[in-house]
Image 1 (spheres, rainbow, N blue to C red):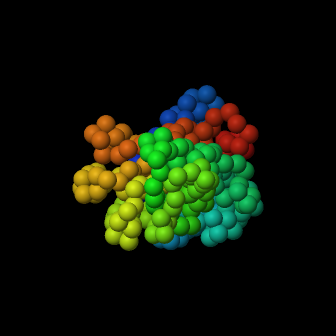
Image 2 (cartoon, helix red, strand yellow):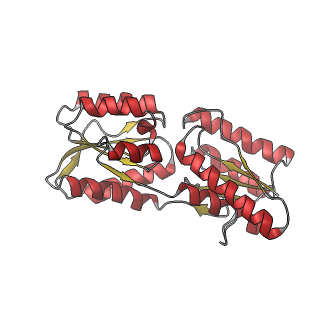
Length: 271
C-alpha cells in the first residue's frame, strides 16, 4: 500500500514534521497489518506556497490518476478554487483522498485532518491582547488564496473586534508563503504606517530565515510580533527574545493521523 503525502511546498519545517509523522505511522501500520505500507512524501518543486506550487500539486495529482502510482492521497491545499476539481477527479477515480493542514471543504475529499483555523487565529489575537491590553494598530501578514490562512485572519479580526486594537490601513499584506516576500511586506507596513504597534504573521514563513528575522526585529524593537507555528527554530528565536509570542500546531500528528490512525476519515481505512 502506497500513500502520497503532498505538502504545500518543500523545505518548510512544518511539512517536514508532517512527513516524519507519516513515515513513523507507516512503519507501525506495516508491522500491525503484515503488509508493507509506504508513506511517499511528494513535495512540489517549489520552496514557497503560491501559484507555482499549486500548479505542481495539480500535476502530481493528475499523474497519480493517470498512472495509478498510489493507493491513497493526503494533501495540504494551496489554492481551493484550482485544486477542488482535481481533488474531485482523484476521488471519482476511486483513490481515497484526505486533506491535512489546509482543507477543500466543498470538494469530495473524505475528511480533513488539521487545526481549527478560526480558533487558531483567535489564539494569535489573544496573545496580543495579553501582551498589550492597551491596544494600538496591528497589521496582518497572510497568503492568498490558502483557505486555512484566510480562516486564521478571520479569527484574528473577530477576537480583536470591539477591543482597543484596530487594523492598520496598510493591512493585510500577502507574503506569498515566501520568507523574502514576507520581509518585504512587513517592511512596507512599517513604512506605510510608522505608528504600527504590532504585526501578526499567520504562518511561519518569515521566521524560516533566522538571521534576516533577527535583523528585522532589531531594527523594529518597538513592534510586537506574534507568529503562527512553533518549529524548533522558532522556539530558539523565542528563547532569545526575537519574537513575542507563538501559537503552535501538531504537524507530526497531522502526518501520522493522515495516514493511518483510527478515525473514519483516514486514508488506510478506505483501502
